Image (cartoon, rainbow, N blue to C red; front, side):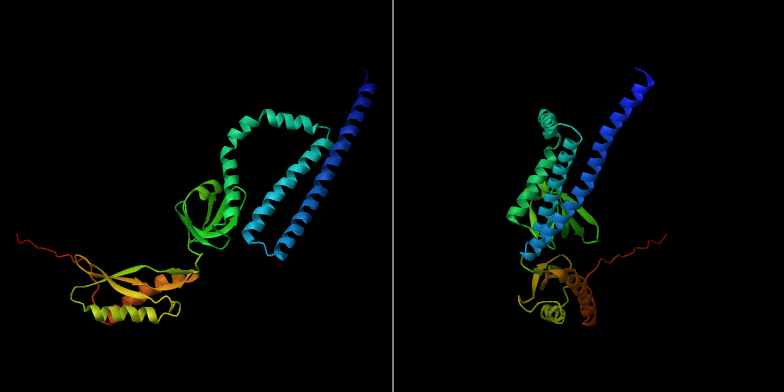
Length: 270
């Protein structure tokens, strides 16, 4: 084959495949734009029909991946790759892929279960898999929480749906469980009044249910009181820390002793 024929053949191939590649790029750009508009329109419909925010994000995530896969198949067909052959290759490798993605498929199934049974939703304060945080997003494979120290926590949906979930936001209120100990010389009635005054004077502690102060235990060196105020879920930590601080100040003001270890030094004369 002389140089002229080689050049001609090269130009023909470049023209043929260049046009296909250019067409594939155009399809990708237009397809991505269309997908973006479709997802935006779908989200608007969901908002109009008052879909739950958790369900919105999950379905939009799922639709986004589905549309992108379809777009890739269209581009492959445009490039001349037989999608039937492509599907056959995937089917032949199905067992290996299935084993490799077993965990991911389990997480996907877990995400579907979370959407069906709805044990949690975005904004809920939950405890699961040894972590505590506010649900930020429920995706196809994972759920993201914002931890109490503002760290991001990512939990696989499979583990989340199969494990225990404590949802602190379901009822809208929480009980704050605190224990304070005073010396045995302290008057029980006076101590209970001081502790109850701390609770009733706090603006974020609810009047109903009524807060309680009870003798919990006669310990080795202290009388322990169970202090149980109620508050809105979002006020939990504010109440927890405020009551702890205010109790110390109130007990000091009433001259009620809070026991602590005393170390006695023994000096030996030489």
